[in-house]
Image (cartoon, rainbow, N blue to C red; front, side, top):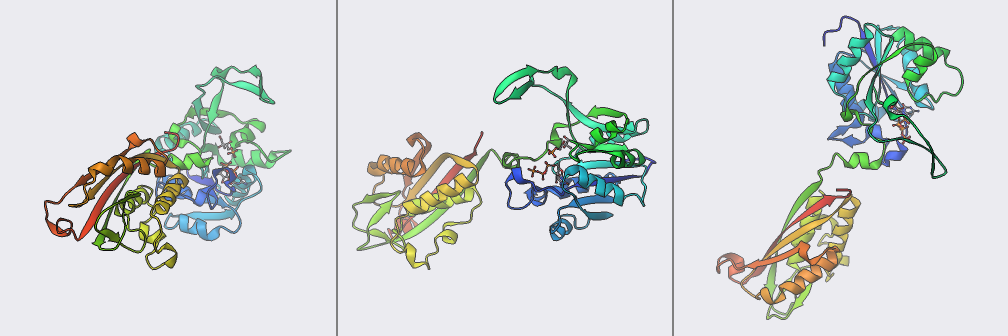
Length: 381
Ligand SMILES: Nc1ccn([C@@H]2O[C@H](COP(=O)(O)OP(=O)(O)OP(=O)(O)O)[C@@H](O)[C@H]2O)c(=O)n1
Ligand SMILES: C[C@](O)(CO)[C@H](O)COP(=O)(O)O
């Protein structure tokens, strides 16, 4: 960007992020592989903003330093009770630098296009303030106690985003002059209250504010796939369980649990689809509590992790590799059992079988192998 005027930026990142339901304030949570805060800090620094003042909650200095590592000219300040307080504290800290312009941005809007910054800066050459806005596409009503009490002219309304750009002296004086509750919705309202003009430029849907847990889910793919593979040794004197069905056979599978090779491959496929490790992480063979355990418990647990990750099962496809027993006569019982364990329709479950042409350990009837693939679909899709 080739603007002659100097410009600083403020990122307000001092909120609690309660509505987002993350384990830490949302600005420090990972989004598209990086802390939320880092995304817009990088974009603002690349656009030439200096210094970059970041308002953070008390006690989160380490998280903030880590999130902003390597970004030049960053100054941290402790934020205030409200967003408006956080902005004001950051503005006062910039007084010594006295930049020509300042961009004030929510950390919670990580996807900041450079085109928006350019549009804002261009307007500041003429106006004291400029903000990015988007049209309202739905009709709007006034609500009271669950009933509509009126309507509004949406053509006159705009959705307001950040960054909001200001001549530094104008916005600092406006914040200093503010009287009353310090709960202004944004800094444009503060400038307007002091009589300053605020120009509107086109915003961008990419600037969507991460507010609720679902906003974090949207970064995840709508459909994910996992694969699993397992082998167990055939032995005399063991029961044979395959895909949750007990089969009469002269040999059974040996293992720490019931050695159901089909269910084990399926568990790994489900865990793989939501990147939740593998069956050995959750049910170590060294743990005596799993000795002789029904593998259906492992499947139920894997399904619970899929649900916890915000997904549901799309379909599963499983192949058993053995010379004997013949799987065909048991296939429907296996599909029914799997559908029950996964709480899906039987049409979403496929069980196949193959010999390995008498080749290898399965061909010599020393063991049975199984592979499975599972697709999971993000809730809301
Ligand atoms: N005292 C505060 C409150 C909010 N913010 C910041 O203002 C931005 C917009 O606020 P919002 O999305 O409402 O964030 P939170 O207040 O953290 O969210 P919640 O209301 O869910 O707790 C966020 O980047 C947030 O960190 C801030 O710096 N200081
Ligand atoms: C500043 C803002 O992002 C403009 O839309 C918005 O007002 C912040 O509101 P919040 O309630 O603090 O999220």
